Length: 199
Image 1 (cartoon, rainbow, N blue to C red):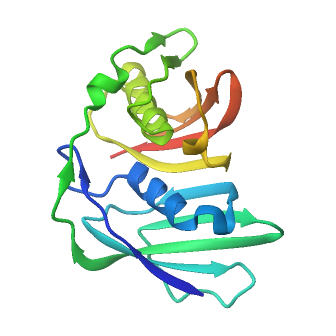
Image 2: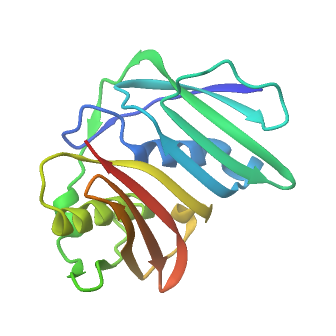
């Protein structure tokens, strides 16, 4: 087992750690040592503190963590791994600027296709782009009260490492207006799935 910690800044005006930042921090930590593929990242609760993490091979004895903030599963070479993240004692004290409205403003929404498309810009990471676009798409399709939360992403490899000209998302499944599954494409190549829940 490998234990490590992840320190964060709040994104924009949010007062919780954003899923896109958790994804990016984990990928940076794993780096070239693992080159993760078949990634499945899920979020189980909101955290306002920095995170403690445990990385284990799937074949190792199960971690004692039973109520994680987030779970990151991936494969590397012929092994499968799991990272469980829990809320640490370190309080997040800083934040950084993030203009989600500016990011999604140029996107093209097609109601009949339940899709949204953006000509990509280098200012934001790919994970930030797809999550912001999905939120914008869902807000255009569903109008009842509540707040959308990014709850899961399933991809074959790190999407932040890719150079992308166009990003397109298409809603493919929803349970009412509370739980959704969206497929996303980079330059019309299917990349994975995003899951959101409304609370």
